[in-house]
Image (cartoon, rainbow, N blue to C red; front, side, top):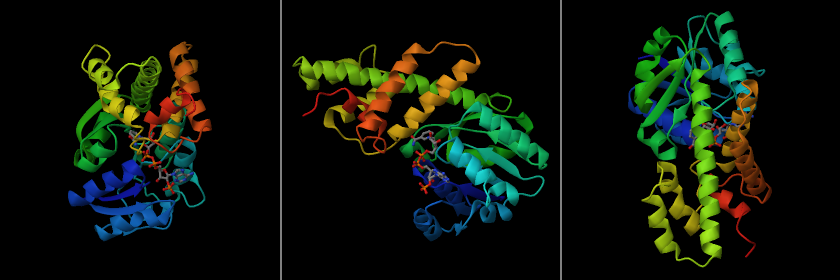
Length: 289
Ligand code: NAP
């Protein structure tokens, strides 16, 4: 079994690392806030103090961090993983990132004699914990075959979208649609609240009717209950919509609905909801209590 290094033990990375351990891989973990690595240590992982140390003995290095800045830091920073990787190491970037950075990283990996996949995920906290993620992969199909046993330990579906960057592009499209749908759900529910409708009647009608996509089904009750326990932080949805708008700009594609939705997430962040679940976007729209 290959030795795998995991960089990033947030909501997603922690679940992924646990599932690799359960599948019998030798796992070394790194997290900027080292305390978060303790449960992994108890489950049998080695803890590294830097990404460089984590990558040193690994045959596979997988990153699951917040954004482009975090990814650049763990791969290329002073103690970054790329300072330690040996030629032949398989690098996997699973964070949701810009396609520009993912392609730049792939090129740096190539110069080091490493292979690279972008493999962002669908699914959230529960799917990361349950080993039920869905990987959206960009890169060489032969490299994917090498990565497959590792991805299969963390997920139940793998889709190969094309060359490096294709997984990242697909992921941004996936999330721009999810982000808009939840902002729209929030608008509908606030109107229902203010118009005096009975929400116990409204929610089943919405989620079991034409607007009831899986994400609308998942967030409606939480919005009504004001339960913003974080599965996916609002600040990262704002980040994803920003990256989607950047991508669209590159292709000269207008995304006016995404731009409007991104502003609602920005307002919710300004009102102090950045670290809550992105269902809290509704708080940008509700009148003050
Ligand atoms: P999270 O819980 O906020 O964890 C973020 C991780 O990134 C933590 O390990 C954090 O370290 C690290 N990090 C942040 N800034 C850093 C920096 N400058 N240098 C080094 N490490 C840094 O986020 P998450 O929900 O696990 O999401 C991780 C990635 O998966 C994001 O790209 C997100 O968009 C994507 N994603 C999330 C979900 C979801 O439902 N949660 C679903 C699909 C994809 P600290 O612990 O030290 O803060």
